[in-house]
Length: 245
Ligand SMILES: NC(=O)c1ccc[n+]([C@@H]2O[C@H](COP(=O)([O-])OP(=O)(O)OC[C@H]3O[C@@H](n4cnc5c(N)ncnc54)[C@H](O)[C@@H]3O)[C@@H](O)[C@H]2O)c1
Image (cartoon, rainbow, N blue to C red; front, side, top):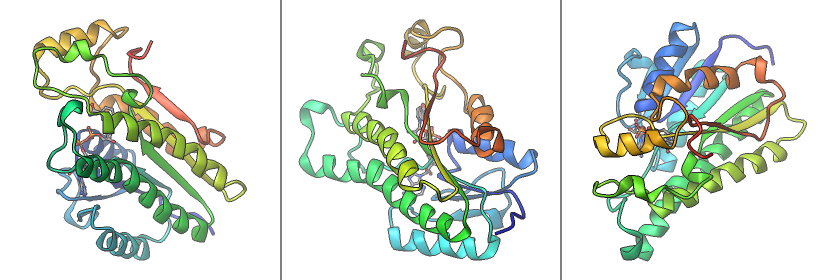
């Protein structure tokens, strides 16, 4: 099929990283569509589709409705970050129900989104899917950074993020010969409202900046959706200012 517009779909594109990349790609001339449970502040109403991705049937309907309208999709980026109401409970107090729910929300949803995206890519004969893991999917948390703060790094997060790196490889390989790429980005922490003590300790483990901004990921995302990365497939790109070293 002949490519027309550079349409990009960003799932969970209204958060920290999603807001930065949606604004950036629109300025670069891409047509960005966001599906998120909250509105994207940079896109016009028609391009910011409100939907709870955890309601898989509703999500699939919204996704299919969008595809029908825009037809060709250059890339799908999953930035959605789903969790249940007990997210962040200490490892020592975890309940089976919460483990089950959160592993499904964080990892299972990535598998479902990948299935829906790749089934569509197979029909259009081309595709580029980008999933998001984290430095927590590669290394153990640096627990000392969290001392005397209310911050936590849940074990389900580490498990799901490690899984996302592996399903990226699985998906890339299952798409062999289909003109579809699947890659993963593992960012370091993004500066938000973390306590000063955390920001300081975190920076000591890095090589220059410490916590990143959402905008710091714009370059790598643009590279992955472009033809400049044509033969990068099944990979995990780590953008962490050296945190994992
Ligand atoms: N922020 C960080 O420090 C950091 C670091 C490493 C990796 N990451 C990863 O990057 C990705 C994006 O992170 P972020 O910081 O932009 O997260 P964020 O929480 O700022 O944004 C996530 C978006 O997902 C949306 N969302 C949540 N539940 C949803 C649902 N049920 N249906 C539809 N939309 C839903 C939210 O509304 C939000 O806009 C995540 O996978 C995260 O794990 C983030």
